[in-house]
Image 1: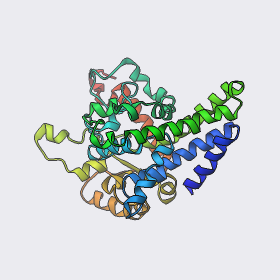
Image 2: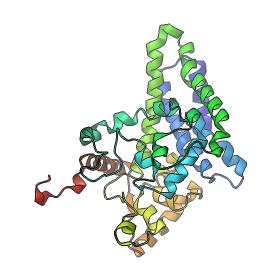
Image 3: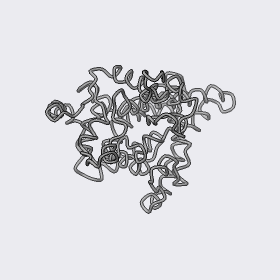
Image 4: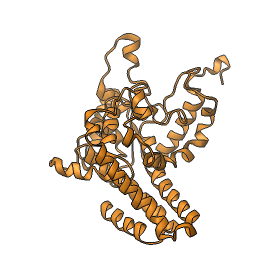
Amino acid sequence: FYIGLYAILDYYWTTQPTTLKLAIAFGVSQALIGLNVQHDANHGAVSKRAWINDLLGFGADMIGGCKWNWMCQHWTHHAFTNHHVKDPDAVNAEPILLFNDYPLGHPKRKFFHRFQVLLFLPILSFYWLSMVLNPQTFTLQHTGAKEVGIRMDNDFLKSRRIWATLIRFVYIYLNILRPFWNNGGMEGLYTTAFHVLTMGAAESLTLACLFALSHNFEHVDRDPTKSVRTNGKAVCWFKSQVETSSTYGGFIAGALTGGLNFQVEHHLFPRMSSAWYPFIAPKVREICAKHGVRYAYYPWVWQNFWSTVKYMHQAGTGSNWMNPLKGDL
């Protein structure tokens, strides 16, 4: 369904004059590909046949990304979720946004982070633009990946760089340049530019908002390896995956987001098809309750999102580190 929807809207986007409604619809359809097709595929969770996963994984390129770059970064994110120096997703938005809740006085804290809750959505709306125009596909250099120690100039990515570059140029031609031609060139320049940016914003907000709330919410564990540094106590990887993730909704939300609403279950079983997450979630919660593991569940997505907004404010102001008895607040 999602591939068919994308194909139909992309046909109209690349062959007909653009409209505002089409821009929004096409942007959302690209986000749905990112959520429901490429994600499971690049985890090897769509099919037992590797070639099917490999083919559907190119859904990342169909929406302006790169499947091979994504795999290198995303798999590292799964291994080190919310690790303040090893999770690329935790530092990708820096220095503009802080997802890490750094201590007061930390050099990465800037004065404008105190207002990041107000800038949160406007900045996320540029996610698509930063992805499409990011030269990392060609240069194999990415600030977030480099900061956590991922070498993007590895043999795996080098061997695929020419194909990734070619696919990116095709995407830019079809989805950015073609609309200008269809709208009459210079005559419709500003209208077309507005439609293209609107399309990108629609994809960005749909994707980035859902990505952001998965590991950034009130009482989330932002330092899962603290026990090792403080008292030498070993970290339970499964426990850390649960306490750094959240789950919201149920079957319907799963059908719309490719199971990414079941973020706890996904991080415990990343190679499992997301179709199974609604069925295993009750048992996962039962086991977590039995062993005293904090499982964050929100019945509705807006509740999870509101918790994320609160967390972004806390991370920006450093309020979690303040002591009201000392007059910090």
